[in-house]
Amino acid sequence: MNSGEPKDVSILIHYDEIGLKGKNRPLFIERLSKRIERAASLFCEAKVRKRTGRLILEASGLKNPGALIEALGKVFGVAYFARARSVPLDIESAAQTALEMIAPLKTKSFRVRTRKSFPATPVSTREWDRAIGAAIQARRHLPVDLDRPGLTVHVEVIPKEAWVYAEKIPGPGGLPTGSLGKAAALLSGGIDSPLAAWRVMKRGCEVVFIHFHGAPYLSRASAEKAKDLAGVLNGYQLGSRLYMVPFGNLQKEIVLATQPEYRVVLYRRFMTRIGERIAGFENARALVTGESLGQVASQTLQNLATIEDAVRMPILRPLIGMDKDEIIEGAKALGTFEISIEPDQDCCSLFVPKHPAIRSHAGHLRGLESRLPVREMIDRVIGETEIIDFEADGRTRDHSFAEIHPAEVEAATAPEA
Ligand code: ATP
Ligand code: MG
Image (tube, rainbow, N blue to C red; front, side, top):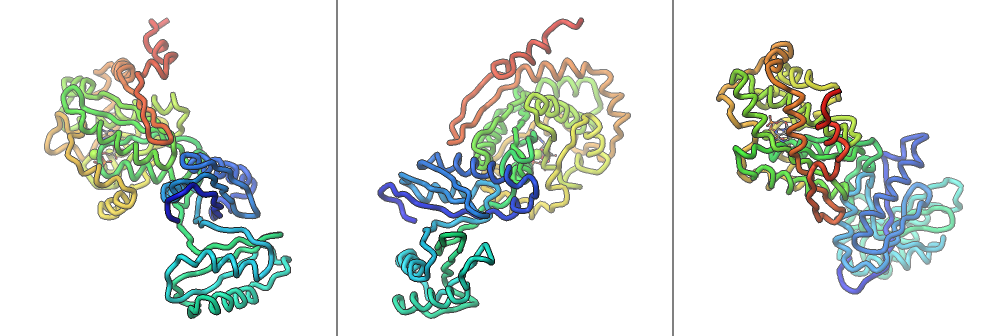
């Protein structure tokens, strides 16, 4: 598909997994249709029709087909898609359209694959394969190669029409955004957490992002990175919110009251609590982190348990069993790796010893926290949090916490009864 004059095109879209969801199936399909329309409407006028086990996107006035393809490649729930044309149910029409569609394509060999959705349709797929193949051979003088063809012409027969296409493009798979509700991801400037957030997004969750930065003691470099990372992830959900939590002063309070070796775990307990509070404002039902077992001192089984002890909400850790190599590979494919390796200072490195505790016990940590005004510390930090909203096209808008959540600010500052 080349750029040029605005075009009207049809795109045939397949989903696999959501086809399996039994009673929820119509809901999933409806949601997927809306997600596709949302993605496509950034580039053209978009209408999605449901057609026996597949979706047809009618894109009119399309100026930049490449951008539309890229966007569809990020709609979770899409298994694969192709620019396609509808023809009447006869071999000649299908062959003629196939020839037109493959005319600009260079290839050394080809094959034809006809499929039908309903056994009752009066079409023999083998006969169609042969007849369409013969017509293409006669006109293009191309050899047929059934095992390793340079090109496959696909013909999908559904009631009353057939769809023809040649270039099949993989989608991201997964489940449509929002079909599994909402989660809140703790997004550092590192390599792991963006991939963790994306994994949960792929499984149908809308994800809200939360970043903690070390201001005023550290630069805002990590915050800038988190914003860029959220921008990449936003391409998959087309509308996102990023909470920027200033964590430095709270860390200083922890430092003044506790022993060095437990600081990282204490920071994490506070991050997780703040995450849970923010998740509550957003109706998110789980937290997501990029933790992977044994990767650093704070990620031993004991420490993970101690961190978890601070909250009631489930913590999802999609990378828990992955090696760093595998995580890096995933981050590269996602396009976040290059951003993540930019230098910054994560707030967790603030005031910490070289050898933090690898074993901790929740009871001990609770004891340390009993010297701290935990609730008050958290309220203060949340009040100072900034919010960045991302539009579908990537534009951002900054807000104060009070602008978005006035009721919560009032509740936090009200004198206790
Ligand atoms: P990452 O590459 O995601 O930063 P990491 O291997 O550096 O992970 P840690 O720094 O121990 O591991 O962080 C573990 C998890 O805690 C992160 O994956 C992230 O979910 C969360 N986290 C850590 N620092 C921050 C931060 N500054 N803001 C938000 N979340 C954070
Ligand atoms: Mg980190």
